[in-house]
Amino acid sequence: MTPPHGIITRIARTGRAAELGLLVFAAVIVTSALVIVELNQNRGITLDLLWYGAGYLAALAVTHLLVRRFAPYADPVLMPVAALLNGLGLVMIHRLDLASVANAAAEDQPDPGLQAPLQLMWTGVALVLFLVVLVVIRDHKVLQSYAYTIALLGFIFLAVPAVLPARFSEVNGAKIWIKIPGVFSIQPAEFAKIALIIFAAAFLTSKAQVLNSAGKKVFGLVLPRIRDLGPLLLALILALGVLVRGKDLGTSLLLFGTLLVMIYLATSRVSWLIIGLIGFAGGAVLMYRLFGHVRLRVDIWLHPFADAQNTGYQLVQSLFGLGTGGIFGTGLGAGRPDIVPYASTDFITAALGEELGLVGLTVIILLYMILTTRGLRTAIAAKDNFGALLAGGLAFSFALQVFIIIGGVTRLIPLTGLTTPFLSYGGSSLLANYVMLALLIRISDSSRRPDKPVSRKPSTPLVEAGTEMVPVVRKHSLRKPSGEAS
Image (cartoon, rainbow, N blue to C red):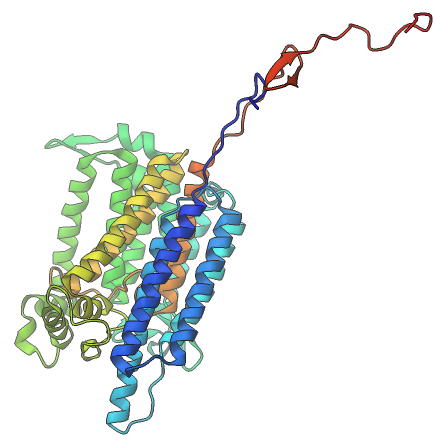
């Protein structure tokens, strides 16, 4: 039957069926990887496989239902890519747990604490927070109204570890934690990063025209006016100052690079990038001269084998692990990634590179490239400038964080101590990454949601006659006079 004349209809595809198929594909890969690890490590399958596999599948099912209900038009690729990365991280953490248990048994030591069950628990908590963001923030533009309040919360998150005593905030020389021994620990800089990205997106949206038109031209570069960038520069200086004081070099670099790219996205001026890179180079030289821990990181980067058993031990073991993996890797569960310190957190990409090889590590990098690309597509398709800048900043922060951590592990740049998004063990990182993913999905749902159909009343009523629509001729009066015969 043909639709009535004057009614404009359109069937919008939500992409949820494609998302479900990709999630099933991710579940098959992760389950197969768990089976391979169990067979290589235990020569059989234990109940741990059932526990981890069932928990992972349940998390995927709940996530899909939540996105289908609260963001039905969101990009169907974002969640499956994140789920696959999260699952592969869980596989490697479980594999490292098996190695630590075997090493403890060989040395007649008590069983160490297992990280995989905690990571699975944190995944569940992260998905709950993911749901809260989708339910509470029905329109991402609401965040623009609270930009300065959110920025203030971000500064508080950054400042608290810096003012706490070392026993409550310091881990491996960096004061970036809030911890109560034996109870919990959290890294607030992960959430402060999100707050500052939201603030930068709101501020740049309101100042875009001024930043594009004002400023003096020197040597071909348009210099910004300080008063136009005052709040953003103040926020950046305060954040970097707190992070440098706390020796959190990785977050400092990540935050600076992300805000610089967001300024470029808002203005489309290459001069801003050049000015920012010059400022970064000057700041890096200054920090190298002022701070001993910065000089140590650079020395380890330049000469890792000079003190391979002490300061350069982490990087040297990482390079040996990647070299052992070669092109195709040793196979899941067949290598020795447990020799690398912090293999489940800072060096999880080195552990995966050893057992999956260059090919497997390249696939993981491609997954991050897909995640970033889909995030940037969301930014391009956004219907408002704030959503475009927010999505662009979030997507680029994923890419820059991966570059910083993998660059440090492979000795491309100095080590900075960041975690790999969705892969590394840690509750703070996982919670923050899922909040960022929820914001991207919310913006994507808003940009892909079709407009409501337009309806026009036909001039002549139509009724169905066979397979065609024919007009109905009515009398002017619907009520006959009392004296008229039927």
